[in-house]
Image (cartoon, rainbow, N blue to C red; front, side):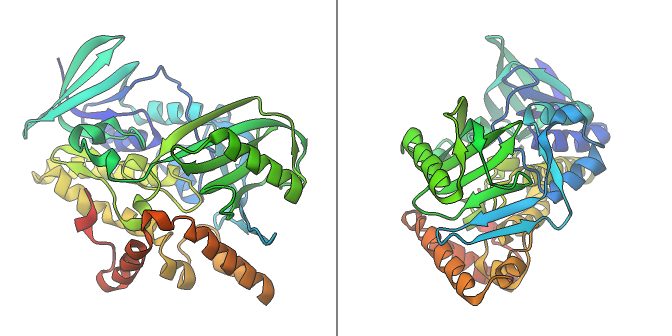
Amino acid sequence: MRTVDVVIVGASLSAAAAAKRLVDAGLETVILERKQLPRHKICSGILSPRGHRFLLENFGPLPREALHEPTACRGVTFHFPSMVSMPMDFFGGTTPHLHRKYSDYWAIKQSGAEVHDQTSFAGLHDHGDHVLVHARKNGEPVEYRARQVIGADGPSSLVIRAIYPDYPQQIPWFFVGQKFHDIIECPLDTQYFHFWFHPELGHYTWSHARDGRQIVGVGFKRGDNFKSKHENVVKYLDEKHGVRLKPHTDDEGCAENFGPSLINRYVFGKGNVLITGQASGFLNMIGEGMSCALHSGAISGEAVVEARLRNRPAQDLYRRMIASEVRRTSDQWNPLKVAFDRPHEADFPAALMALSWRDRAKVLRDMWRFIVLYKEFKWGRQIFRAAMQRPLIGGYPMRRWL
């Protein structure tokens, strides 16, 4: 059995950020990763300015191998069924287009933590003064004893399932898939991430350029047919935007936990087990989760360090410290903040006001029709309640967090 200060599950960006804080404070930290590193990661790779600043400040300049081509993204363009399009530049200028296989590996190495790849998390037992972690390395059982465990293993987190076995049944799950196409003709600006507010296309539909090909992605309720959803989007892009693509060459997909950021239903763990990153439910409005992962991961590491210094429960400190990241993320989905503030890293209100009165009306109508797509999940009242509580308590209620 290996005894360490902290075990982190998942070699993600949130894990790298947490490990950096822990290692810098002198805590022995081991990261467990079920795949061999560097490993593939399903992701658009479009990083927000805030995430880019974090990487520069904490890990240094990105190496060229950690970037796709085009290497940078200028902003995001929203497209609507009325054929109004709204290009919006990021406030902080262009941001990197991360190749997650290599950017995550680079960040993990920069953290200074010890990494055990090809090691699958199999369970844990929190004994109060320590956590016993069960894993498998090349099929053989291995065990770790740690003061704290940080779950940074993504939406389908096995660490969450270990401490909250019923959680997967408590939230709606979506499937997000993307297919890669060689391009015949594509008028879409390669400098932007393109997103469609179109209920007939899916719950989350996007496209952007990568390494000489075009990604066509769609998110939808788990159980729907990926092939038919994707074909519908490709046909729409051809007919409405003049995007002509060859048949896809390969594809990929994964389950996603959309919803926690909208309704303030985050998961932060129990006892000596802290949950962070997208496993917690952090997701920005354009579906970018990397900046949330980096900042929440760093906060989880800081909470553990602070708990040691002050002899306080790490879970209690983490929940107080993570409230700032909850505010920033949930504000992006808060209709009052969207209407009267600027919670995003691209200026949606300014882009909207730059339109004619007629086009503004079309955009608002189209957005409402898109929001109705989520009616079946009964999120409306929860979003409205959280929006009303935000100015009253200066944040979002902790009692809704697991």
